[in-house]
Length: 144
Image (tube, rainbow, N blue to C red; front, side, top):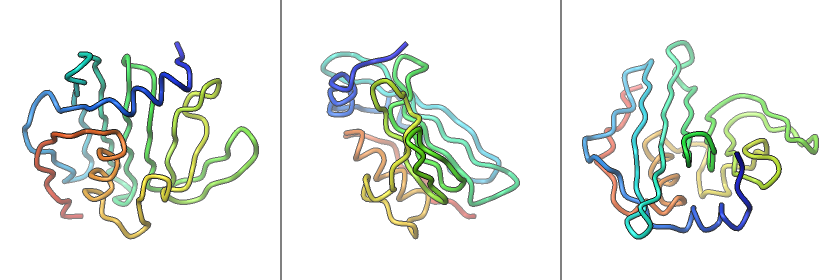
């Protein structure tokens, strides 16, 4: 299943809120969770996933999904990636949905205002702001 680029833009711009306001925990590693979000105006549903490795404590991923399987935004804290056009990425990068390619293209983290030195809780806050999440639970900082 895929969506158009216009649908992606529309979905990102929609205001979203978390369905539950329990604090978000990013530690201890390994850690994994999924939270649901809703767009109040349209009742569209979204999912936010977090996965943190137990072996590489600096390795973690955030996924923002729509309709269970369509990844709109994915942040990767480490790793290598090569885009379909051959452009390589090493280190932190962000995948943004692109019509015809799904989440196969990676972009510099600066596209979302993220800095290499940002802690994972700050990265999450910036990711939520990019996705227009206007009401979110308290994010507990990681203890690393």
